Amino acid sequence: MLNLEIPGRGALVLEHAVFDYNGTLARDGVLLAGLPGRMRRLAEHLTLHVVTGDTFGHAASQLSELPCRLSILPGQAQTQAKRAYIGALGDDRTVAIGNGWNDHLMLQAAALSIAVLQDEGLAKESLLAADLVTRSVVDAIDLLLHPLRLAATLRT
Image (cartoon, rainbow, N blue to C red; front, side, top):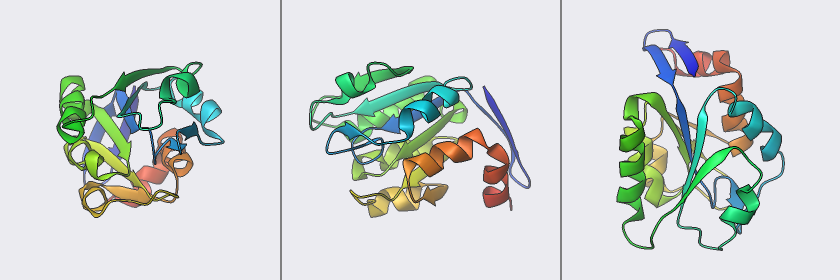
C-alpha cells in the first residue's frame, strides 16, 4: 500500500499500479532498460498489473520474471477493457500509467494517473486525461518510489 498526502487535495491510499506495455514499459515489444529493479521495489508497496494488446507478442516473456499480473487484451475495445480493469480493482485505489490513445479512459478513471512521453509518443487524449506527465516510465516509477515528489507536483 502507498499512502500519499497531497496538500490541498487530500489523501490517496493506493493498492494497485496498472501499466500499459507497448510505448510505456516497452519499445517495439522489448522491456525498457532500468525497469526490472524499479518494478521489484515498487511491488513492495503496490500490486503491479500490466494490461496490453501485446502488439509484438513479447509481453509474457519480457515480464516473466517480474512481480506483475499480465492481462493480454483482445484486439477490439481495448480502451474500454482497460477502463473496466481499473474499475474492477477500484478506481480510488489505483494509479494508472500509459501513453496511448487506448489508455485515456483508464488514466481518466484512476485515482492518480501518469502519462509518459517516450519514443512512441503520447496521445493527446491521454495527455489531457492524466494528472501529470513524465519524460519516461522510469521517472513515473521514481515518483511513486519517492512520494514527496508527487506531493510537490500535485499540491494545490
